[in-house]
Amino acid sequence: MLDFFLGHYAYWFILVLLTIGLYGMIMKRNLVKKLVGMTILQSAIILFWVVISSKWNATVPIIAPDIPCAQAANYINPLPHALMLTAIVVGVATLGVALGLLIIIYRNYRTLEENVLIDRMK
Amino acid sequence: MITQNAPALIPVIYLAASILIALAGMRRKWLVYPLAVFATAIAFSVAGFNLFLVLHSGTVSYRFGGWIPPIGIEYVLDPLSAFVAMVVAAVAFAVLIHSRRSVPLELAGKEAPYYAVLMLLLCGFNGIVFTGDFFNLYVFLEIASLAGYGLVGLGEKRSPVAAFRYLIMGSLGASFYLLGLAFLYMATGSLNMADISRIIPYVSGNPVLFVAVSLMTIGLGIKMAIFPLHGWLPDAYTYAPSTSVAMIAPLGTKIAAYVIIRMLFYVFGVHYVSRDFPITTVIGWLSVIGIIYGSIMAMTQTELKRMLAYSSVAQIGYIGMGIGLASPLGLIGAVLHVLNHAFMIACLFLVAGNLRARVGHSNISDFNKSYCKKMPWTFAAFTIAALSMIGIPPTAGFFSKWYLALATIDANNWIFLAVILISSLLNAVYFFNILERVYLRPAASTVPATLSSPTAANPGPQREASLSLLVPTLTLATAILVLGLFNAVIVKKLILPMLPVVM
Image (cartoon, rainbow over all chains, first blue to last red; front, side):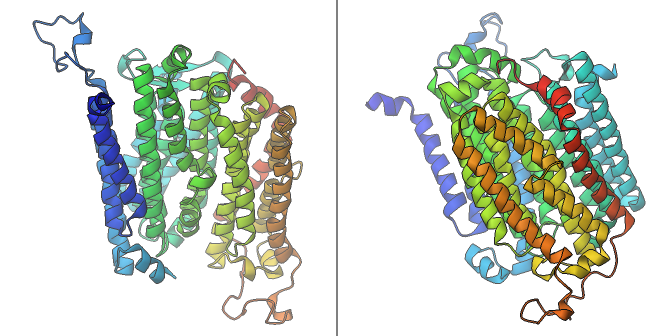
């Protein structure tokens, strides 16, 4: 039982991050805090991709002279890392658009608290 | 040479147009609109050519950078993607002609950014349609979504708030999709759709795959606005500028529905999603609740755009129901409804745009006979689209409901059949409410003040919408009739070839 928890510690950590991110996005009343939650959620997913590509007794995916290319299994899978670079860029773009929207919201309503905002929108 | 490159051509055209428009906006503002129309017209003709090509010489695949799939990214032109790309191109072209007058009215001074982002939106949609790679699909999904948030946020004072909520929900959907994709990659070791569909039979007992399908479906369900995940839609559609909502409403949710169809039936396979892990049943039941909920909410609305938004929730339910039935007839109904609803809702939102251009509002409670006298053509288009929404033959809306009804009878699913009939009646209630107002209710001056709102504030329309607003509206209305009359041809020539072989 203990092995099950300790053996998957990276996954438990990611699960905790996912929960924090989801909680922030859904439960927080401040719009900036919602964005922070969104970023945490995205980071958790990026970490998850990185974690699933790692394996025991394997090395970084750079061709080493002592490991021939034929033994590809001795290298860590580099594809998820490359994919996650793209996902990070997408996340940055999303954050940029979101912050731009927040600036307009603040200019229009002078607040970023959701309950105050709903009152002022009526 | 052009036949080899055909799948990648349309996204590239839109991407180039987006950059050119952004550059032209800095110095030569007059170039912006012609460039957008030019790009859309080329994309429209390429989409027509693609459809012709795929029906005559079969599936075409394009490999980016010459890398052989599954290692490289592949773009696939098959009957389904060619069909959806054609719908996107046709609706985009009609709405863009409409934008010539409506964009300067609603977004004065923001034309260049508006068209640049719009081209990015269309690039995203077409990328999603053509790509044969799940991760590439995620990137294009986010390109389209980010452009969509921008277009929604350009509207009136409340629109940035609606856009922000849309962004939070949309990012949540994209994150779920990406998380599900990680599980799919764990189970299959591939991202190429064709490759994964070959691997699925060997790993179909693996519980990781259940998690993958569920998470990806939830993520895409948020983008598609399936019933409990539709929260972002009404506000976004109500407060966005009418011209951008006329582009997002017909296409955005349909593209997500296309991805769900592609993923469930073409990659995981009908057998897997309806027997091994019956997620289609869940989608079907949620959609049924969504149809009833959307119709009832639409009945209580007093603003045309908001009513259409709730009506969209209901209409998306029909597509979900077709997916949920997981039978050839159900899929025909779903795909036909993607086409029909795209034209109907685009036509109705253009009518709302015409009203905003001429009257300055689209409050249903203010409608009366003077509206139809002053704007006869606009309301003729509205009537055709409304009848199609209700599902009265020979308009297009009847036939997609007909195929769905046949599919429910085929599956002995009487509850779904009852829902189709009840929701048609509910649609009739809220659309006939408007038709009754504009065709039968006398102008407010002859009615006691208690029955209608004060007339001094709202004198009603003075004249018909100008020609460049009217032509696209009427073209879409005519298209609804034509699609209805030729539905047998469309189903036989276009939709039957795209059904998965195992069905």
